[in-house]
Image 1 (cartoon, rainbow, N blue to C red):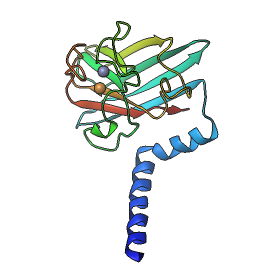
Image 2 (spheres, helix red, strand yellow):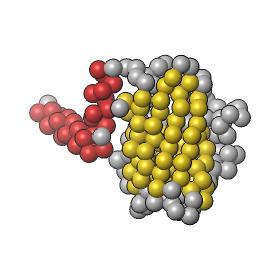
Image 3 (cartoon, rainbow, N blue to C red):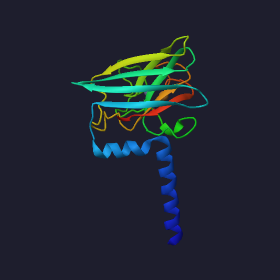
Length: 186
Ligand SMILES: [Cu+2]
Ligand SMILES: [Zn+2]
Protein backbone atom coordinates (compact mmCIF):
# COMPACT_ATOMS: atom_id res chain seq x y z
CA UNK A 1 0.00 0.00 0.00
CA UNK A 2 2.74 2.44 1.05
CA UNK A 3 4.93 1.43 -1.87
CA UNK A 4 2.12 2.09 -4.28
CA UNK A 5 1.57 5.57 -2.78
CA UNK A 6 5.28 6.45 -3.12
CA UNK A 7 5.27 5.19 -6.69
CA UNK A 8 2.32 7.36 -7.65
CA UNK A 9 3.92 10.44 -6.03
CA UNK A 10 7.07 9.77 -8.07
CA UNK A 11 5.06 9.48 -11.24
CA UNK A 12 3.26 12.75 -10.48
CA UNK A 13 6.59 14.56 -9.97
CA UNK A 14 7.91 13.29 -13.27
CA UNK A 15 4.77 14.45 -15.04
CA UNK A 16 4.95 17.86 -13.35
CA UNK A 17 8.64 18.39 -14.11
CA UNK A 18 8.11 17.46 -17.75
CA UNK A 19 5.05 19.71 -17.99
CA UNK A 20 6.79 22.73 -16.46
CA UNK A 21 9.90 22.14 -18.56
CA UNK A 22 7.95 22.09 -21.79
CA UNK A 23 5.36 24.73 -21.02
CA UNK A 24 2.41 22.36 -20.82
CA UNK A 25 1.56 23.35 -17.26
CA UNK A 26 0.66 26.93 -18.11
CA UNK A 27 -1.41 25.71 -21.03
CA UNK A 28 -3.71 23.48 -18.97
CA UNK A 29 -4.04 26.24 -16.38
CA UNK A 30 -5.16 28.70 -19.03
CA UNK A 31 -7.60 26.22 -20.56
CA UNK A 32 -9.36 25.83 -17.25
CA UNK A 33 -9.77 29.58 -16.90
CA UNK A 34 -11.03 30.22 -20.41
CA UNK A 35 -12.11 27.59 -22.92
CA UNK A 36 -12.43 29.94 -25.87
CA UNK A 37 -10.34 32.78 -27.20
CA UNK A 38 -9.49 34.84 -30.24
CA UNK A 39 -5.75 34.33 -30.44
CA UNK A 40 -3.53 31.31 -29.88
CA UNK A 41 0.19 30.90 -30.43
CA UNK A 42 2.85 28.21 -30.58
CA UNK A 43 6.50 28.98 -29.97
CA UNK A 44 8.45 26.66 -32.23
CA UNK A 45 11.57 25.15 -30.63
CA UNK A 46 14.50 23.33 -32.24
CA UNK A 47 14.29 19.54 -32.38
CA UNK A 48 16.37 16.62 -33.71
CA UNK A 49 19.58 18.66 -33.40
CA UNK A 50 18.34 21.48 -35.66
CA UNK A 51 18.50 25.21 -34.93
CA UNK A 52 14.98 25.92 -36.24
CA UNK A 53 12.99 28.50 -34.26
CA UNK A 54 9.76 30.30 -35.01
CA UNK A 55 6.26 31.27 -34.08
CA UNK A 56 2.78 30.26 -35.21
CA UNK A 57 -0.10 32.65 -34.54
CA UNK A 58 -3.77 31.67 -34.93
CA UNK A 59 -6.31 34.50 -35.00
CA UNK A 60 -10.08 34.03 -34.99
CA UNK A 61 -12.36 36.44 -36.76
CA UNK A 62 -15.99 35.93 -37.70
CA UNK A 63 -16.10 32.44 -39.17
CA UNK A 64 -12.47 31.76 -39.96
CA UNK A 65 -9.13 31.13 -38.29
CA UNK A 66 -6.08 32.71 -39.88
CA UNK A 67 -2.70 31.13 -39.25
CA UNK A 68 0.64 32.85 -39.82
CA UNK A 69 3.81 30.79 -39.32
CA UNK A 70 7.27 32.32 -39.41
CA UNK A 71 10.38 30.16 -39.05
CA UNK A 72 14.09 30.92 -39.26
CA UNK A 73 17.45 29.15 -39.23
CA UNK A 74 16.01 26.53 -41.57
CA UNK A 75 17.73 24.97 -44.59
CA UNK A 76 16.48 26.52 -47.86
CA UNK A 77 13.72 24.67 -49.73
CA UNK A 78 10.33 23.17 -48.90
CA UNK A 79 9.57 22.05 -45.36
CA UNK A 80 6.37 20.29 -44.32
CA UNK A 81 4.37 21.81 -41.47
CA UNK A 82 1.55 19.97 -39.73
CA UNK A 83 -0.58 20.06 -36.63
CA UNK A 84 0.16 16.89 -34.70
CA UNK A 85 -2.36 15.50 -32.25
CA UNK A 86 -0.50 15.73 -28.92
CA UNK A 87 0.70 19.04 -27.44
CA UNK A 88 3.89 17.49 -26.12
CA UNK A 89 7.29 18.59 -27.45
CA UNK A 90 9.27 16.96 -24.62
CA UNK A 91 11.24 14.40 -26.60
CA UNK A 92 14.36 15.42 -28.57
CA UNK A 93 12.94 14.04 -31.81
CA UNK A 94 9.46 15.51 -31.10
CA UNK A 95 7.87 12.08 -31.55
CA UNK A 96 6.10 12.83 -28.25
CA UNK A 97 3.71 14.95 -30.36
CA UNK A 98 2.26 11.78 -31.93
CA UNK A 99 0.82 11.53 -35.44
CA UNK A 100 -1.07 14.08 -37.52
CA UNK A 101 -4.15 15.61 -35.90
CA UNK A 102 -6.96 13.85 -37.76
CA UNK A 103 -10.29 14.29 -35.95
CA UNK A 104 -12.30 13.47 -39.09
CA UNK A 105 -10.54 10.14 -39.81
CA UNK A 106 -9.41 10.93 -43.33
CA UNK A 107 -6.26 9.91 -45.22
CA UNK A 108 -3.24 12.23 -45.30
CA UNK A 109 -3.45 14.76 -48.12
CA UNK A 110 -3.27 18.35 -49.25
CA UNK A 111 -5.03 21.24 -47.53
CA UNK A 112 -8.18 22.29 -49.39
CA UNK A 113 -8.31 19.16 -51.57
CA UNK A 114 -10.37 16.56 -49.62
CA UNK A 115 -9.71 14.10 -48.21
CA UNK A 116 -7.00 15.46 -45.91
CA UNK A 117 -6.12 15.65 -42.21
CA UNK A 118 -7.21 18.78 -40.33
CA UNK A 119 -3.51 19.06 -39.42
CA UNK A 120 -2.24 19.01 -43.03
CA UNK A 121 -1.03 22.61 -43.30
CA UNK A 122 1.36 21.94 -46.19
CA UNK A 123 4.86 23.14 -47.10
CA UNK A 124 6.71 26.32 -46.18
CA UNK A 125 9.11 27.62 -48.80
CA UNK A 126 12.31 28.68 -47.02
CA UNK A 127 14.55 31.14 -48.83
CA UNK A 128 18.34 31.27 -49.06
CA UNK A 129 18.30 33.49 -45.94
CA UNK A 130 16.88 30.54 -43.96
CA UNK A 131 13.57 32.31 -43.33
CA UNK A 132 10.12 31.03 -44.26
CA UNK A 133 6.57 32.33 -43.89
CA UNK A 134 3.20 30.73 -44.53
CA UNK A 135 -0.32 32.05 -44.22
CA UNK A 136 -3.46 29.93 -44.24
CA UNK A 137 -7.15 30.59 -43.56
CA UNK A 138 -9.34 27.78 -42.25
CA UNK A 139 -13.11 28.21 -42.45
CA UNK A 140 -14.64 25.04 -41.00
CA UNK A 141 -11.84 22.77 -39.84
CA UNK A 142 -10.38 24.82 -37.00
CA UNK A 143 -11.51 26.70 -33.91
CA UNK A 144 -9.81 28.20 -30.89
CA UNK A 145 -11.45 26.45 -27.96
CA UNK A 146 -14.45 25.11 -29.88
CA UNK A 147 -15.70 21.53 -30.34
CA UNK A 148 -13.19 18.65 -29.98
CA UNK A 149 -13.41 18.08 -33.77
CA UNK A 150 -12.06 21.57 -34.49
CA UNK A 151 -10.21 22.77 -31.39
CA UNK A 152 -6.53 23.42 -32.15
CA UNK A 153 -5.61 24.16 -28.52
CA UNK A 154 -3.36 21.58 -26.89
CA UNK A 155 -2.06 20.27 -30.22
CA UNK A 156 1.48 20.69 -31.61
CA UNK A 157 2.88 22.47 -34.65
CA UNK A 158 5.66 20.40 -36.21
CA UNK A 159 8.19 21.56 -38.82
CA UNK A 160 9.87 18.77 -40.81
CA UNK A 161 13.31 18.37 -42.37
CA UNK A 162 11.78 17.55 -45.75
CA UNK A 163 8.90 18.24 -48.07
CA UNK A 164 5.36 16.85 -47.76
CA UNK A 165 4.50 14.90 -50.94
CA UNK A 166 0.75 15.04 -50.05
CA UNK A 167 0.27 11.38 -50.99
CA UNK A 168 2.45 9.09 -48.84
CA UNK A 169 0.55 7.63 -45.86
CA UNK A 170 0.19 8.37 -43.05
CA UNK A 171 2.17 11.61 -43.06
CA UNK A 172 3.56 12.69 -46.44
CA UNK A 173 7.10 11.23 -46.06
CA UNK A 174 8.39 14.55 -44.76
CA UNK A 175 11.31 13.23 -42.70
CA UNK A 176 12.58 14.21 -39.26
CA UNK A 177 10.79 16.63 -36.96
CA UNK A 178 13.12 19.64 -36.72
CA UNK A 179 10.79 22.07 -34.90
CA UNK A 180 7.95 21.72 -32.39
CA UNK A 181 5.64 24.07 -30.52
CA UNK A 182 2.53 23.58 -28.37
CA UNK A 183 -0.56 25.57 -29.42
CA UNK A 184 -1.93 27.52 -26.45
CA UNK A 185 -4.07 30.55 -25.72
CA UNK A 186 -1.98 33.69 -25.56
CU1 LIG B 1 4.24 16.42 -39.32
ZN1 LIG C 1 -1.49 14.41 -42.54
